[in-house]
Length: 391
Ligand code: SF4
Image 1 (cartoon, helix red, strand yellow):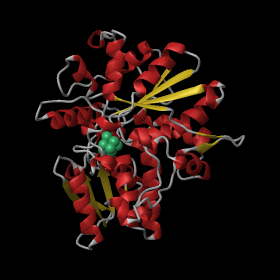
Image 2: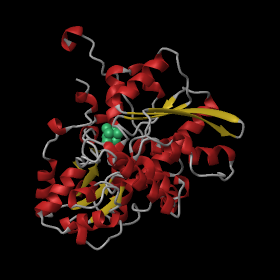
Image 3: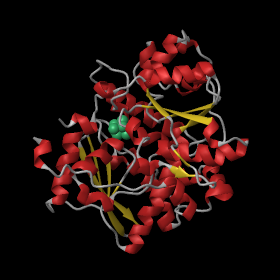
Image 4: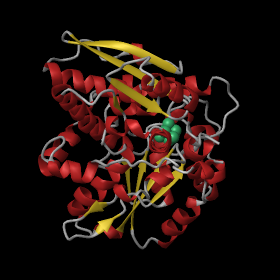
């Protein structure tokens, strides 16, 4: 059924990557780098008896260090990078007249649906890689150079709410080409929030009693805009914060785009950017996503920019997250995500000083040639052509 490509539950497809990661941590032969997605920090604590909706960023980082990771970076840093790349693409499309609607690209569950059932929308999807994949590309180029090691001596492990992320890392078009011609995979392993909890329990680490630790630099700094990637509507809101300022050269009067928030399956809003009306939509959960796409295909709806997340609630409800019996669990995790944004000093991706430095020192400018080489991808038609195979 639908689960095979969207897999909000994912249990059937879960390979024990945690076992492979455990071996690597015990062997300590390579440099081990971890990154953590925005929604992991608002759910991991549930596995250790913390209240649903607790934010456990510092303990999560501390537990990864205790497990033996040499560096712990924040996928949120790369979410800021995604916004700068994708926001620039949106602004370019406004200048060039399309193609519209433009779709977000960071959910691999959605990308599977796109390639298998809705390939006609392929030109509409942003070419920006997901934050996970942007982070790993930057770690194996920019960061490897900074610390003077060969990229193949680094093992990159992502902690994700998501089981579809495990396949995303193996896509051939996600590989990068190094200066010496070698082609490498960027993320080596993905473990889910639940798998990380399993490792912490296995090593008998007292999670709730851990002293908070900080992400490593320079790939550990992030803004509130990146934090909200974990909840449905968040990528849209983060992109609008940046696109508004890039288009108008003016500071946003109000940061919160409350019209795009909430848990309704399909939400729409019209945003005024200096007289230009930008029509946006957000869908999450497979059934809602399909309804929205069918309506657009049938010409019943029109939008400029659309955010799609395969799981209910977005990544806070991902298939790799802790199981919960709390009927309000998505609301509680979403509130935790928004609280991180509100408490952040920096709340717009383009204002992240380490992102600015990354462009100055390495990537030149958003959507530059090198940014395209490392941070962008493409999609292919994977529809099943023969009816016999479907039946
Ligand atoms: Fe993965 Fe998030 Fe997409 Fe779910 S919504 S498939 S957790 S990226």
